[in-house]
Image (cartoon, rainbow, N blue to C red; front, side, top):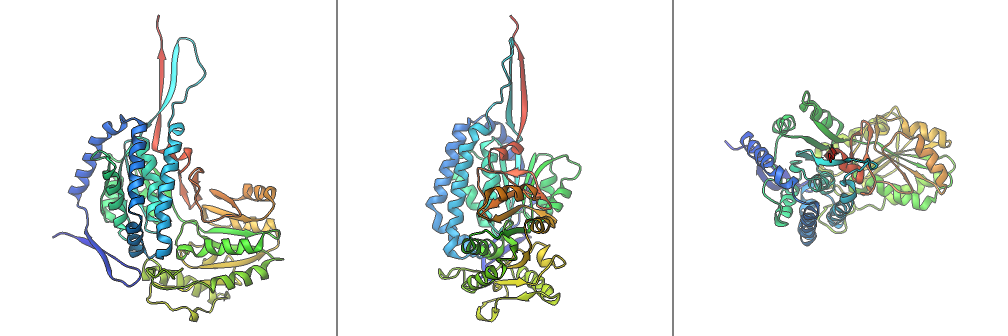
Length: 461
């Protein structure tokens, strides 16, 4: 009997697609094809790899409307925003392609008479990419494109909530002329994914997802000494200083907290505001949040769609309820929002919160954020660092020197000043503590997908 799964629309619970689960035999075929294709792809010049990446990007752009609609149907992002992820994927791929020649160039030490010496970056081999549903295109491209540019072959496993993204990625690269076996996908359940992770033919695992998911991947690879990159959860803070441009900070931080219904690893999940600006910030944020339109994500007027599944919405609501029971106060009258099903959750701001509450310490991944007043930089730094996570932190100020001083004291992978919830593909994307290990994006992101090979050639005359 063939086992299959269904992807249900968060909007109304309807079946978007049904696909069979891959079998152990399918995994064997895919890995054998990948291993066979690896030498030919490694020997392909980087310039030709770049041509294929560009052709695939152009395919994505030509199919933007269809891909955006599929994205909304699968994971619920409002259609008014969905095409932005396709454009972002194209831009990010092109940036990584532009960085590749320098990032992958030979490293040559000072000349030494009678010797030719250099370090060459060579591909690892088979890269297994495990991607999530929340930003299914952008999270996947972070690993896929640099892996291919580096000369690796790729096997992609996507979330069962966004399986069409995996199919379309491979479709794009196939249309671009990528040789067979170089880039494949499989729809794998947890058991088969664990088997793939532990398979000795897989040389590197790139995982994006929850902390628990990262721990499971690490366990599945146990004893293999396999290299991996883990981009995990976040509880990213924003600190609004007394000198901030408050109107700009309110608009940006609220968007950073609620875009994609808060379902982002780098979403703003806790806000600290200098006590002198606290009341004004809270009033402005409340007014802005009340302007959201909750509803069917296929409606162009919708600005806040459903969470990916009803159980995710229930988990977020349980954090809100627990905080309120412990003394937190809700600022948003949720009765003004119409929620079509259990997957929808109205936006919420919480005050009178503290770090004894999960809403300020555990990853929430939903449309709610807590706001605390702080006395100044020292208290803000202490609270921002009081977390099991460390992905990004944003500082809202007009004093760059202050932002540098605060940022240097923060335990985080990225420090923003007057920006949040953003990935710059020319900068390293990295987390500390429970937010993961390894690095994607930038020239540094190529390092984990290659290994150095030294050439030490003595010339005899």
